[in-house]
Image 1 (cartoon, helix red, strand yellow):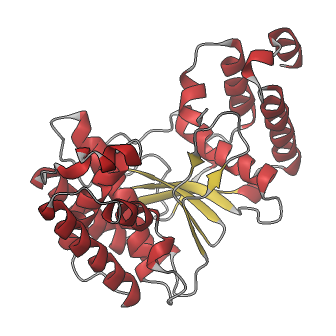
Image 2 (cartoon, rainbow, N blue to C red; image 1 turned 180 degrees about the vertical axis):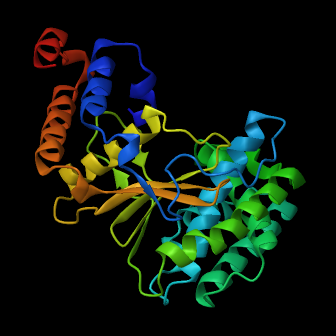
Amino acid sequence: MSFDSIMNEKSERAKIFRDILFVHKPHAHMFKTISGVQPFSTTLIVDNKFKSGLQATRCGVAFHHAAQIIIASVTANQILTRDLPIYRRAHAVYTAGNLTEFYHETLGIWLRYLNACISKNHVQSTLKLAQACCFLSHTDTLPNMTYIRQGICTVYEEDSEVVNVLKQLLDIFLATFIPACVKVDSTIKFSPTFSDFPGSAKNEADVCVDNFLVDFKTSMYLNARWSIIAQIWFYYLMNELEHPHTPYTKIGFYHARYGETTYIDLDTISSSVRQTASKDLKWWIDANRDAELFDTSKAAKHA
């Protein structure tokens, strides 16, 4: 199961999961911003509204990948193109066969473009990067390689509105997040994945830069909804359980339409709170290894 699915599930086990996160999560007032303004209060910069939810989804997925490419391009050759999730996925599609000539040629062009961005440590055009990531992100919408072999992925129409908004977001990202958070010698981990969670769905964050776990947000809405804080808190706790020797020092968000980075230093949260939260989450995970064997009476008693 994924974080989103259990958060939306209407069951006793889901309620207990939400309660564990809610009780221990940091409060909104504990966060800070890179700019120094009050957290979750920055002025909207890019206010273009999409006509459909599909456009918003495409923009969000493409921004996630484009931001990773920009981060990789400004570091000192420590990141290879194949380290990028979007490149691995798109390259698998490229080599799978059964593609139209146009789709195959276009995919090859954009894959070579990504390779040039990383090898030369430079993104020359945010418009070109936006176009590349909108096209390559199309492969992210395909459930599995069967779709690719059947040729279902070969239809693509560029949405100029999505590309234009994405370009604006990338220009702001280059001017705000990069100089504030990424150095030439920064240690980068893309898409940290937490697998020790019941079910087969991936629980994947966006990027970790120098022990700062960041979740990218492209929504127009900037507020301290408890669910978004719970999500980054959940990622932190999962890392504590799975990788205790590589702890995060900060967790937070980059709000792309606001050009703002909001974060919390984890040492401002008492160690007892962090340890209790980790212990309670581990209990819940162990109790749900097999959902059918989950004893709700014991769970209620624990809660």
